[in-house]
Image (cartoon, rainbow, N blue to C red; front, top):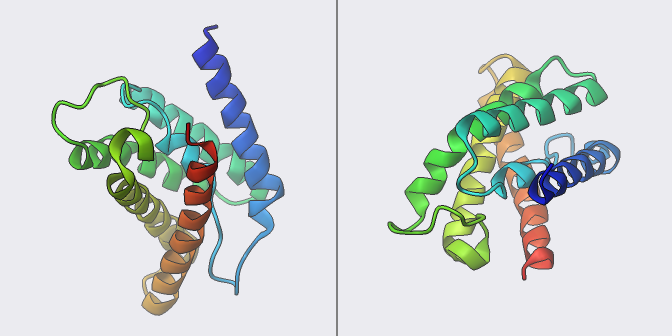
Length: 166
């Protein structure tokens, strides 16, 4: 195994443990929940293959579903966010940017990185809450849950980015 693979595996396990034991227990006002494993998907290098993104996303969501006893909603939502990630990233970075970058504030700029995180986080939460509610009969509940969870997750992702910047 290469050192990159070992580091990714370590980060994968670390982010899962933090989500399961800390952030999985936080539900603000019954609407907002932070989902930190998105950070792992968002920070994978630009050259990561689409199949690898989908595999990492599905595996991460599946493990969280098993730990939280949910019927596959995290696996579906995380896989969807991983599927959309490359398209979102390509739409936000400048033409001619190197393929070997790891998305972050230092490599693509704060405004592009915040847009990238916001779009991917919303693309995660919409299917998550649609599957959780399993109806669109409560659009206000859906909107509050998506907005609150997006803001809470963005707060923690921005803190993580600020703390890990080189």
